[in-house]
Length: 210
Image (cartoon, rainbow, N blue to C red; front, side, top):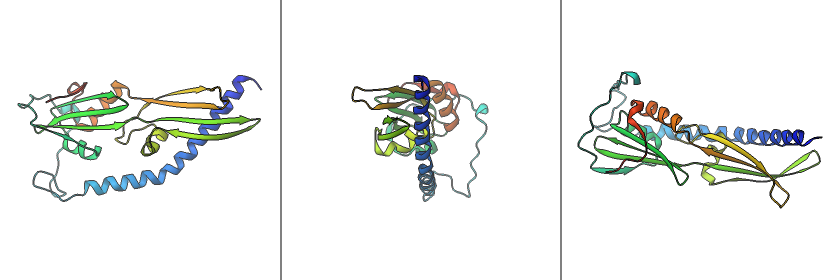
């Protein structure tokens, strides 16, 4: 059996492992979806639309750039993408960046500078092959709460990540399959414009500051 054939077998085994782990994530996805629905169903206020108040949302192409207000007067760092998206719909200006392994988004809406950040995962699968058998020594993910994002290659906010796979063998004798995720700026710009209902030209690569 040649080197190329052996490498293909390693990849097949790793794909099988990832697929099995993804199956176990289905129930987690259902729970996350339920939690998001619960977070949206909060007590309505006079400033927020209720079920009885229709919200008109036209196509993105009909939106026009508008002049910025005098500027934000307060900062608000949000932990929930659902809340960030709701508060920053049709924002005056949006910016995004990747820094220190985090995907960061900021937006000015109603004179408030909102921000949201999310850790980009990475994953390593350590395994050994003996004859036709493969033994998995460990599956290492940067943080426990990033298991779902690492397995699916999608951030919790819904942004799909670029993926690069590297195969190497350390001196210890075990093989390592490393998956490195990154954010494509063009994809992120278009995705944010759609999510926040703004023109692409209002989404900047960088950071907003008061």
